Image 1: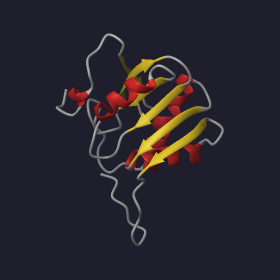
Image 2: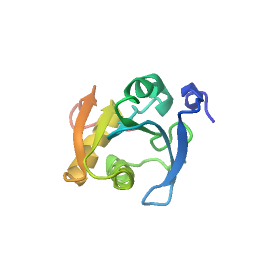
Image 3: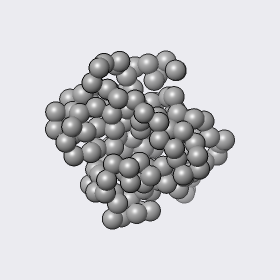
Image 4: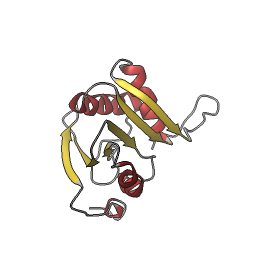
Length: 144
């Protein structure tokens, strides 16, 4: 476990589980709460642990799923480069497990991944909340 992944509190209310991505990579998901599902996607230089306290606050009204994106936290590394189409497939696979119309929050690069998932399957993804999606300059964007 990396130092960033350790930031997520180890509390009895949390469930940590592994999902198998479409390309057979293992991705870690941490879940807390009950209610309508909400997937939270962290930025490119953080891990799901940074959203632990927010998830705990939302747990009274939502079942919050913190997805450790590829090459972050404790999820399986992917040979670089990968792109947002690969991450969109990961997110859509997670939502299929949780049920359609799952709401998604994305921060920074996680916001771009959320947009890619919505574009990939607009009927699967519910509402999006995007925070600080990166801007492109001359069509270039840093993805990791």
